[in-house]
Amino acid sequence: MSGLQCLAAENIWFDKHRYDEAEKRFYEGANGPAAQQQQGGQAKAAQQQAKGRQQKRQHRNSSSQGGDQELVSRMKSLELENQSLHKVVVEMRAALQKLESRVTELEKSPASAAVPCAKAAPVQQVKVTNGDDADDDDIDLFGSDEEDEEAELIKQERLEAYAAKKAKKPTVIAKSSILLDVKPWDDETDMAKLEECVRTVQMDGLLWGASKLVPVGYGIKKLQINCVVEDDKVGTDILEEEITKFEDYVQSVDVAAFNKI
Image (tube, rainbow, N blue to C red; front, side):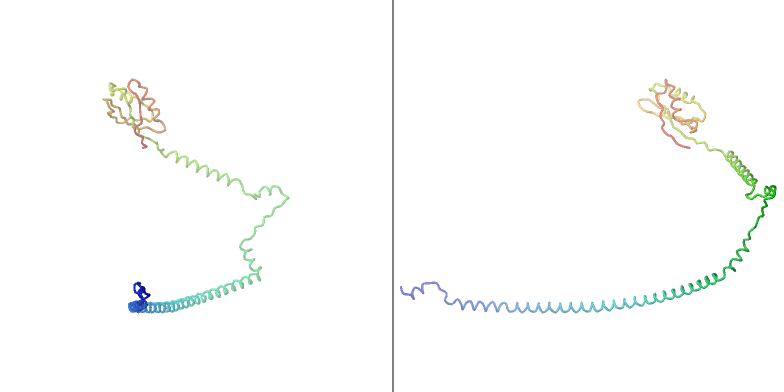
């Protein structure tokens, strides 16, 4: 087999560079409009950036103008305030000068200023002679004791009048209302006799009131009785002690309610 036949049998692409160039041209033609669009978008972005910069510059200029106006207004207000303060300082200086002039005038004439004071408060002179002891006894330099005695008498009279007024005033007696629960031993206890025994308890400052029977359970009833007592004379402990002495009828005594009157 000759060399030409061998080359013909081989799968060799002798025209590859032509196809590569054709492919390159195809893709360049295909990408042409997209590149133009990209360039157009970049141009728009550049325009927008330029507009933004211009707006920022305008905003800065307007803000600087507004700040200048504010500074001018503040300067004017400070000038007005400075002028008013200057007027106040001038007035204070004038008043101070007047005071200084008056003080200097008073310092120049001390004798004339002291004369009216001497006339207003004359000093009484008391002559005391050492030759006569009787005259010394008659002079009372420190005052007499008669005024002290009169003051003591007046004070004593007022105290007596206050004590009499307080004694006439009626004293308020503290009282309390007590509700007692008196419990029997069982259901066979005579409740009428039990109440009679309770009411036999009498003492100074004790007043018995209404009563009633309250069922407890299992046929048993308790006596609920009310009484009014004077706090200084009667206490709950004394009442419980006196009532529980009736051992045949009373099992226990409890305070159900206690109210001040």
